Length: 217
Image (cartoon, rainbow, N blue to C red; front, side, top):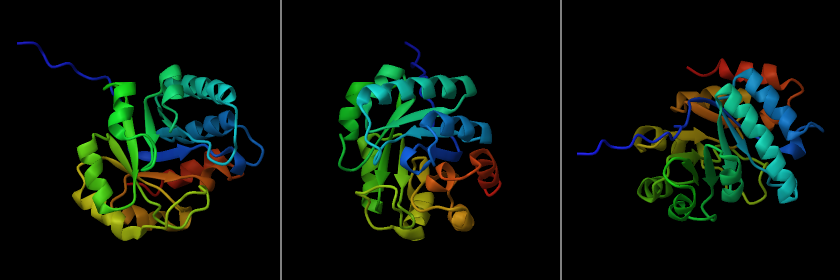
């Protein structure tokens, strides 16, 4: 009997999950921001450009540079939406939303050795994510957020509690999370937490990430 193939797929790591958002980063490039995120100890970096429109060629160069950095430091690298960029730079995975390509279609493109994250906003979507084959889910927005133009209403801490208790998938809490409400999110069971403007808009990204990490168990 043949041995079962062991996938080199990198699992979602617990800790601080950073996302790029250049329009909020006070003139700093995505690469500069990611360098400081990594220095501060983030475990995951997601490349996402929702408001700052860029040519895909420019995005490819940025992703190549970030891939080099994340690989060097053992940080998981996820690309939002762009399956093509993820394949070109050999990212660890792709994150998609409810209205993007379905998980099954993304899996056909990227294969079994990369992770797929799926944004969810309700218990039903969390359950469907398991059936669809997602490797982890985004849970949120926990609180009101303005970092995305097409964001749904805040789902609140109750949905986070549901996922922590019921979902078999790893998850990242996201949406409107700041230092002042980190404890509430951690108390509801989140072990991987995403903060966007709290990090990228900080004057001292390194120190901010270090401080945020102190709230985690």
